[in-house]
Length: 105
Image (cartoon, rainbow, N blue to C red; front, side):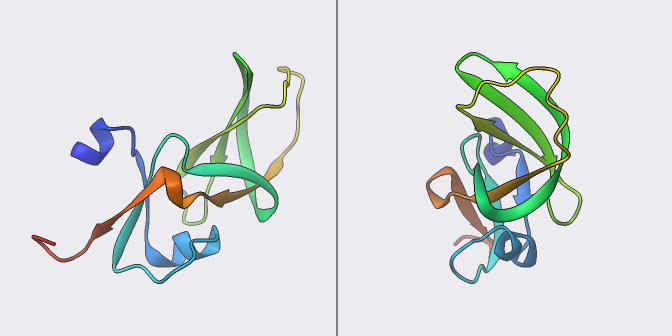
């Protein structure tokens, strides 16, 4: 609940996190913050659900492995006419936290 309140709305199990480039094994889940999913042409290609121009860039809503929905912001300026179907993404550890599966840890 607290993680969601702080903006960590997407959680990934160890396999999903690994598919998005998480660097180490995870004992629990990876909670992805607002800056935790980043565009990377060499990253995992995921389906684009929608494209929204934002101040200073573009926001892509994407489907991540396992079916969750994440958001990726880029500095590239795009328009509603952007019809790309996929984008390469990866996790940025600086924008994520690992929530342990063990209580009180």
